[in-house]
Amino acid sequence: MAADLTERPLGGVAGPWKRWTGTAQATPKSGRRSKAAWTAVGRFLSMAAMLVALFAALVLIVVPVATGSQTYTILTKSMVQKYPPGTFMVMKPAPFDELKYGDVVTFQLYSGRPDVETHRIVGFGSTQQGEKTLITKGDNNGANDPEPVRAIQVKGKLFYAVPYVGFVANFLGNSDRGTWTVIAAVALIGYGAITVYTSVRKTRKRDEPAAEAA
Image 1 (tube, rainbow, N blue to C red):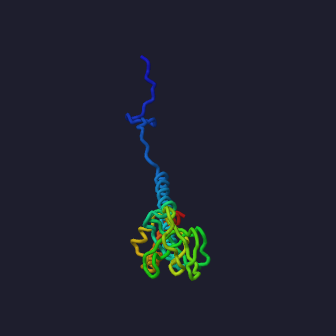
Image 2 (image 1 turned 180 degrees about the vertical axis):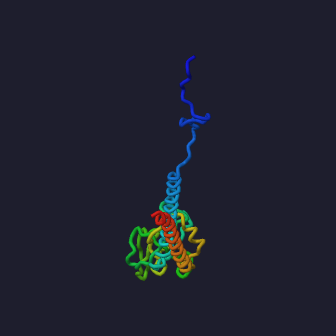
Image 3 (image 1 turned 90 degrees about the vertical axis):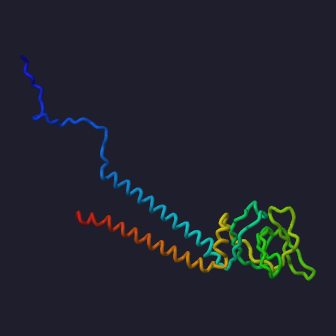
């Protein structure tokens, strides 16, 4: 009878060759990398949101207040080709004699009344007394405005325009711009302080295990 010389593990215990189950456990390093990646994304989004808020505060509140400009919102389609309804218009004071053909100006429809219009200068005229006047027209209108515009009616010349945010500015209220400036400044400073504190705290937590291991 031939002897069975095949080597078997003692006690029937499986040897070093184990059957592959098709699954693998995630290593701690991969978990830490994934967490670090999400942390970096969160920081980027947080910084982006802060920059957007800062830009909005500067453009919509701080700059108009600092330059003594008046802000208005386009409500009609008379300037729709370039300034559709909802456009936020910042009109800066300008000497009447420096206004030129093509400038966009905001003016009172009637001197001393609150109603205003924002149209483009398409010409110049004068009264019988020799006073210089403006001929204005909406870009989307077929005819010039019926009445000439005198210097006393002009509220300002276009400084810059921001599309689609005028309705939000109307909701906040132009008369409360100073209040909103303070609120925006405090909010941004507070947000920045929280972001810095959180970043420093996370850095310290990462450094503590390294210091203990050393």
